[in-house]
Image (cartoon, rainbow, N blue to C red; front, side, top):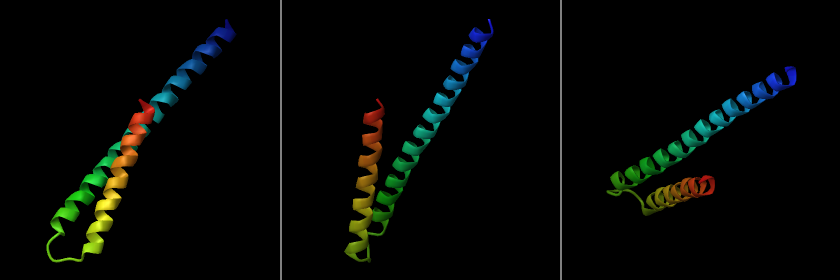
Length: 77
């Protein structure tokens, strides 16, 4: 009986740990998407009166973040 209770406790702990990792991954993907959309918004607002180099950097960085978050979601699904 002790072996069975130990195994049940182990499975319960693994389930809790898996749930924590899933929440952490979802939060990370959400923050990557939020950061990318903020960068796109900044690039749109800053498009008047500033240099083109900073706009290109914002657009490229946001594109990379969008691609990374999409890649993570595709990989996990």
